[in-house]
Image 1 (cartoon, rainbow, N blue to C red):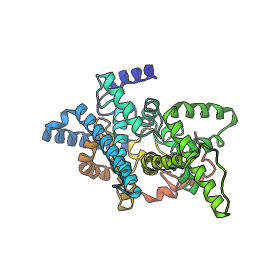
Image 2 (cartoon, helix red, strand yellow; image 1 turned 90 degrees about the vertical axis):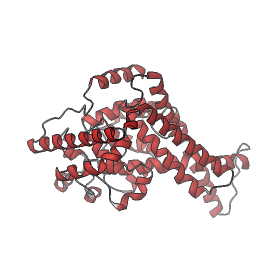
Image 3 (cartoon, rainbow, N blue to C red; image 1 turned 180 degrees about the vertical axis):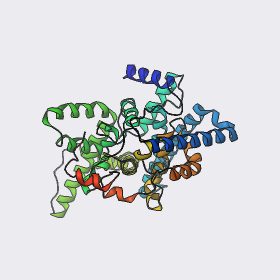
Image 4 (cartoon, rainbow, N blue to C red; image 1 turned 135 degrees about the vertical axis):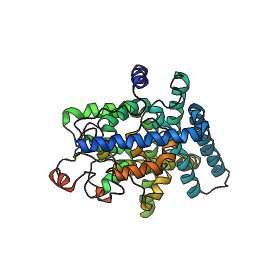
Length: 373
């Protein structure tokens, strides 16, 4: 893991700060559009940095946001345990704090904090993972994410494919966005038998140990209450083993409110937004104009609460990698203007019917081709 991180860090340090993406056979019109959008976003970012000199302290800002998020989640959990907050307030509030740590992890993957201090950089990586134990190892995700930037929307874009990008919009897809461990298992049955073991091993390695423990605990919790509900429905009392005490069940309920539910709410929100704002299949490899749309409709206010407005600003990041998430929020107004003028789609809700294809024609031609990469 460390050797891979060091290799990628070296590559990132040598790369152009604005973008490290190689463009492949992009039509001439979109090449001009991409250049126009990049120039405008970079200029707006420079203007904002000049206006607010504090932004030059990027490492300190990132660490401050992380500590604020962790403190907010811990204090909210304490308020719930003390009976100050109800569960239905606690869960969304913690999920909102956790959404900051996802943005930080994404920035860390691009070495935006403590680039020259490996200890602090890796400490932040570890902390954002601990805050969100339902997620893949961030060092492993770095490899997937950098590949995503190079080949977004293709069969090899495993980061987006893993969260159901390119699949038909069905109840099963919703379930897979909610429970990524279940998504891995279900996806195994869609690929050739000779690749199944390798995929399971890759999934297990990426999830170990935090996500593995998270989903084992979550599935055990769901199974317990499913059995209890079924038994109650038929008037039966389940003879649980002696270690399943009322105290253990009460503790599990607390863990569900403080850890399971907030993480699942946050991850479902980001998976829902991300998998549907990215296009799949019928786009030009490396064409930023076609890779993403902007989702900033009022219909997405609720999921955006739990993924820090990701659908509105992530497309900006595909054009300009340089800026951390809070600067993307500040450049969004100007960026959206130039993106709209240069062919980037906004609130293309037809993507839900087209399985995230750029065109309806292509979706129809690939109706049988929804297997995971």
